[in-house]
Length: 494
Image 1 (spheres, rainbow, N blue to C red):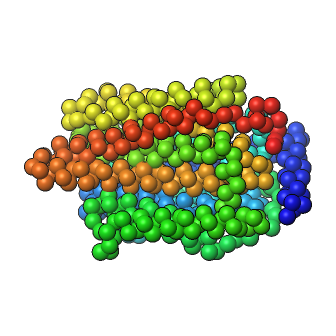
Image 2 (tube, rainbow, N blue to C red; image 1 turned 90 degrees about the vertical axis):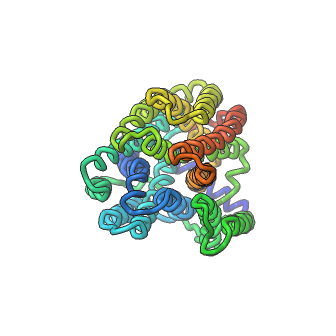
Image 3 (cartoon, one colour; image 1 turned 135 degrees about the vertical axis):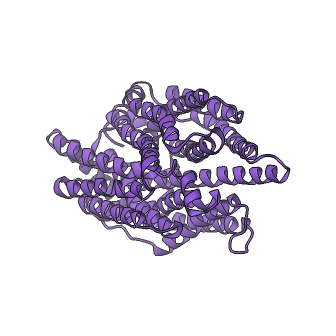
């Protein structure tokens, strides 16, 4: 066992030296650029639905709790599939994994484009999510493999441009399309972009990793589906204010908790022989653990806010879809443009000088959003959204860099998978929790005789209060994230 691990570490170190060879610099830049272009496409798709949800509620005749499944099912599918990517990234070359991811994503986009109703639309979003789930860890693991430790902050900052600008453009494009075209055009227009990225990558993508044997534990895959699915489905059921097929909403939550405990127990046993679907030895690093915890809090608050703000802006403030998309654009673009600067500051100063101010800004805005009402000026909402995006820009690049740089090289694929899984589950849980609180509070205020807009405003305030309380934990976590030792020493690996 020890000899196997030593052999793995030696081969990984040798691979890292080869990857960092200056003669491979042009190849590495090409591979990372192709992955960034494709990630831009899938991230654009991830947020294109946020502004459209109120329109879809009207056009399809469904509730807020039901239509949120277009986002929740997407995030949940990613959370279930991402652990499997740890297996894929170890077993197969870069190029075939890339082609698989973009092919599945394009197929899901085509299904969404022809969907007659909510059910098939959710199916298409699930298929899209499978492709997206593969792309995220593929990008992060490739960057960790190809980029020396002392330069990762800068590269992660460049990645932040794509990861921020694409979601920023998504709601604006959605608002523009919905102002003049049917909602299906959101997918009809994305489809050729996805196919173009697929063709370009199939033509120019090169293999940069060496596959090795890695077992796939099917039992872990099934148990993880029950774990993540039960938790998010239970929260979503509570969000609709109803029961899950006649069962109280807490039942699937309880099933999810039990399955999660079984999943963790099985991984702890399997990782002794390097057979775990998700190797939890990544959490042996306290820095990784704290970073993942803070990432979970921030992602839950972010996705919950992304869902609630368009509903509030359109149903309470009275903006249309295009106005809503344009209001959300400046802050998100600023978050992307700050990426390179934040990355360079991270390489110089480390994470804490960026994380603590960022977490404080996010928390301050969340507390301010608990005060919104029917007369809140649009300018104040715009300023608040810009401010929270600045805070998140200071948070995400340092967290991605510090967390993945804290695990041993042979666990990069698992570290990327763990980070992606936690990120997406937290996002799905944040959406479900925020909508649950909004729906339950609004229903109670309606029953008490308040007008619909006033009742919805009260529900939105309660949801933001939950996010504000959670943000305090993020501030505490930010104080304990440290620069990984290899980065502090300026070394190219562990």
